[in-house]
Amino acid sequence: MKRRLCGKGIVWGFGLLLLPLGSLWAADEGSSGGSTPELSAGSADAGSLQGSPEEMERLQKMLEEQGIAATQAQNPGIKLTGYVEASYTYNLVNAPSFNQVPVIAANPAISGVPRGTPLPSYPSMPLRFTTDGIPGGSFNMNQLKVALEKALTDENKWQAGFRTDVIFGQDAALGEPDAVTGNGSFTNTGIGFNSSGIFLEQAYVQFKVPIGDKSIEFHIGQYASPIGLEVMERPANFNFSYGILFNNFEPFTMVGGEGIYKIDDCWTTRFGVTNGGWNVSRSGYPYYGMVNNMINSSNSYVFWNMYDYVSKDKLFLNTFGYAVAPDGVNPPGFGTRPGANYAGAYDIGGDIVPSPYNDNGLFMEFNDFGTWIPKWVKDQKLEFAYELVGGFSNAAVLPAGLPQMGASTLGSLGVFPSAGLPPGGYNGSTSFFGVAIYQIYKFNKLFSMAWREQFDHTNYNQIFSAYLFPADIWDVTVDWRFDLADNFMIRIENRMDYGKGFMTYYTPAEGVAPTSGNGLAALSNGPFWFFALDVVYSY
Image (tube, rainbow, N blue to C red; front, side, top):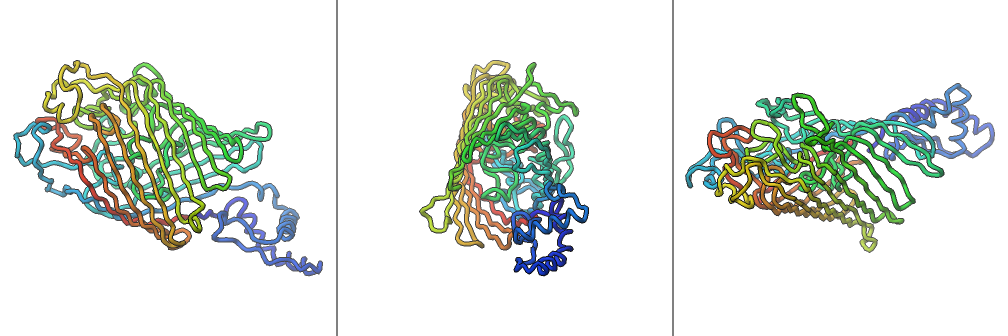
């Protein structure tokens, strides 16, 4: 992304006014000189000047003689970067509209109504990022990204700065793009319509501590999660839509501290400690605006460690790491949300209930991802990427009230055992894992393609949002990318998802207490098709 002129760039820009004087000076000395320095608009740093070292040295001396502090030119200022992203997306799913709700043949074991009864029901895709799972088609203003940073230099000395990343738009609502009126209330639901929000992705103080001939860089505050290949910024990912690994297993942001230590030219280690809740400012559940960091009677913290490897030719990159939460991870976790009576970290009224994300017990997650550009492909046009993720929780608790659901409903949901459940719920371990592979081929500077294949698995209890049963989920995605300018990109995406219960139908509406049954009308395995046209301008 191009950077705006600031700090150092402003001083150099002022110095351009003195270039004619520098040229006359060079002529008087009989020097052949070099060409007049110019701003490089397409370079990584638009504040840099092109010119001979002699000209640069003379210009610096002239600036000092004019009373301009030399340190100002050496000290980088605050950089502003970001992008604007808009799209048109279409899900081939029956879409509710005003006064019209899709009618399905409900599953009697799940809905509690006689077989063949037509039942108005609302579709939901709990495994997709919400803005990627809205039924039907629409135009979207996905993200306006604004990043401000006072960067650290490569010098091995005490220094400090900051970074702030804010995302505006539909994605910023983080899972509730069309019903954010009630955000902050105990039910976290609302009846208003709003397709935009504000998401503070990062806000941290950064500083460098010299240790001998090396240094450690620290970030304190809220920062993007180091876990996972994909990131919150859609333009930085190989594909437009978020993958099922990113949305279901991995945190988006963390709040705490992290340290970065470069061991040598190939190896870097990162480590950190955060509050026990992911994607929230503090880890607890917002009881009428008050948030703590407790799981039952214990404070909750997550410890993580990553190791980055870069080959000497820069063609192979790999990151391996793990996260450990000795007392568990608090909601909202990966995808927990208010659901029906039988699932989630919340009951139908928004009150907290036991689940893997709010009960004491060891939680661990392991992650490995990387990219590889093979040398044997001409002009390095082919790139591979991969990711492996897995973990477990030793405090998985199915909520109380399961015995009252009945054996038929429990059986249809895959809850085991379906009989003999204790009144307080079922305690047991739960685990999950996922794998993803990517293939990217750059035909030329203008056109490239990116393929993504992903597989997720979870066993009993809740790791997937609103799931109690084991599930195997597949995702296949292909993107056609056109880089029409240095800062302008268009992508076309076609995606297919398939797996047990990938889409659920709720009646009368998800998050609203039904008059009978548990609100879940039926499950559908797919396949489900998704199309997108994505447009991005970066600055």
